[in-house]
Amino acid sequence: MAQQHNHDDEKLGKAIDSSLLGRLLDFLKPYRIPVTVVVVLTTAVAAIGPYRPYIVRHAVDEYVAKGDTHGLVWSVGLIFGLLLLQGALQYGLTMLMQWIGQNTILDVRMRLFRRLQQLSLRFYDTTPVGRLVTRVTSDVEVLNEVFSSGLVMMVSNIFVIIWIVFFMFITSWQLALATIVVVPVLMVGTNMFRKAVRVQYQEIRKQVARMNAFLNEYIQGMNIIQLFSQEERQRAIFDDINQTHTNAQIRSVFYYAVFFPFVEMMGTLSLAIVIWYASSEILSGTMSVGMIIAFSQYGEMFFRPLRELSDKYNTLQSAMASSERIFQLLDEDAFVRDNPNAIPAKPLQTAIEFRNVHFSYDGVRPVLKGVSFTVKKGQTVAIVGATGAGKSSLTNLLCRFYEFQSGDILIDGCSIRDLQQESLRSRIAIVLQDVFLFARPLIENITLGSEHLSRETAMNAAKAVGADEFIQKLPQGYDTPVMERGATFSVGQKQLISFARALATDPDVLILDEATSSIDTATEQQIERAIETMLSGRTAIVIAHRLSTIQRADTIIVLHHGKVSEQGSHQELLAQNGLYAKLYRLQYKEQFTAPVTAPISNTAATW
Image 1: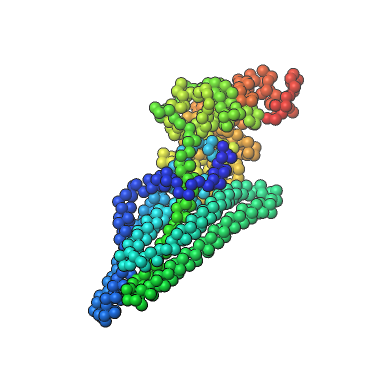
Image 2: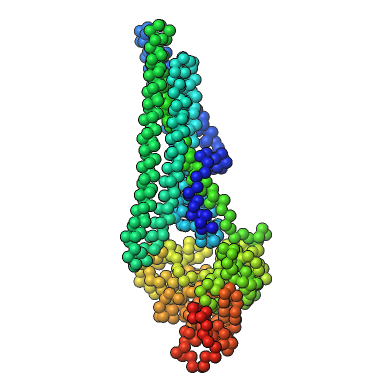
C-alpha cells in the first residue's frame, strides 16, 4: 500500500481525460448562472476584436481613399467606442471568472479537507504527509488557474479564431487562404511542444511532491539530524531533489523559448505570403489597400490565440494530472464504516467485551489472534505484554480507528459497528505517550474548541491533574500561545496538559496508553495522584510497562504474541508464576526474595 501511494505522482496518464474533465466541470454546477453569463460575455468580447480590422478596411477604402473626413471620424469614433466596450466587458468578465474560480477552489479544498478528516488511520500509516499537503495546496492551485481563466480563455480563443476566420473570408477568401496556409506546419510544431512540455510538467509536479515530503520529514526529525550530525548528508539529499526540480523547470522554459519564436515566425511567414499575393492584386487593381491593412491585423490577431491555446492546453494538461490525484484522494475508500442503522452511543451501563477478536494491519501478519476479555463498568483493567504484543491495537480497535477482521467488540451487548463513531469516541478519552499539542492558546489545547466545554471546566480539569501550578506561571496563563507541537513545554508538562484534556470531557471510558513512561518520577507521582481521582467510578484501560502504575488494577491482562496469555489480579498472577511473574522479577529482583522456580525466558527479558 505504501509503495502504491509513493509512486502515484510518477504516473503519466492521458493528456486530456474526458471523464476527469467532466468531473472537474461538476464543480461548476453550483455556479451555472454566472458561468452562463461568462459564456455570453466571452462570445461578445471575442467578436469585437476581429470586427475592428473590418471597420479599418472599410474606412481606408471608403473614406480615406475618397477624402471623406466625416466618414473617417465616424469610423475612428466607432473603433474607439468598441475598444471602450471591449474593455468594460473584459473587466466584468475577468472579475466574474475570478469570483467563480476562487469560490470553486474553496469548495474543492473544503471537500479535500473533509475527506482527510474521514479517512481511517490505516490510510495515514501508508501515505506521506508531504504528499497530502501537496494535494490540498499545489494541486488545487493548478485547478485555480483552470477555473479562474484557463477554460474560459480556451473557449474565448476558439471563438476569436472562428470570428477572425469569418471576417477574413467575407473580406477576401484568397487572402484568408494565404493567411492560414501555414497552419498545418504550426499545428505539427504545437503538438510537439505540447508533448514535450507535458513530460516536464509531470516531472516538476513529481519533484515538488518529493520536496514537500522530504521537508516535512526533515523538519519533524530535526533534533535527531542535529544529534547525529547528519546535516551535510541531508543537505546533499535535498540538493539533489532541488537540482532535479530546477533542471525540470529550466527544460520547460527552454521549450517555451523555442515555441513562442516559432509561432511568431509562422505569423511573419503568413504575413509575407499575404503581402506577396496582395501586391500583385493591388497593382492590377483587383484588390484594395484597405484589404491588405486589414489582413495584416487579422494575421497578428489570428496567431495570438493559437499561441495562447497551446499555452492554455498545457495548463489544462497540468490540471488533468492534478485533478487525477485530487480525485484519487476524494475517491479513497479507506474508511471504517458504521452499519447503515448505527445508533448514537449511550453512557456505559454494564461492560465492554472483546469477543474472539482477530486483527491485522496489513491483512497478512496477524496482530491479535482471538482475543477475548471483559472490562466491567467501574473496573480498571491493565494490559501488559512485550512490544508488538498488540496492546495499543486493542485501544485502536475500541476507538474504531481500525477495522478488525473477525470477532466483535461489544459495549453493553451492542457491537461497536452498530454505534456511530463520533458518539462512540465522545464517550472515550485516551492519553498517549506522545502528546500532540496544537499551535493555539493553551486553553484551546484542553477544550479543543469544543462548544460543550467551558473555560471553567477546562481549568478545573487542569487543577485536578496538577497542571494549573505551572500554567499560572506562564506569561499569559491559560491564554499563552503554544508553539508548534508544544516545543516550549517539557515532556511532563505536555503530559499533564493531555491529562487535563482527557479529564475535561468527563469520559465514560479512560484509556492510558503508556501515559507515564516518558516522565520523571516526581511528575509520575503527581499524575498518579490525579489518576486515582480520575479513575474513581470510571471505567479505565491502562497500558504500561511500569508495573507500579498497574498493580492496583482490578484485572491485569497479559498479551503474548497477540493472544491473552494470562489474566487476573496482581497477586493472582504472581501466584501463577507465569509471564507476569517473570516480568515482575525483572523489574523488582532486588526486592524479590522468593526463589525463582522458573527460568526467565527471552520473551520476558524483552519486555
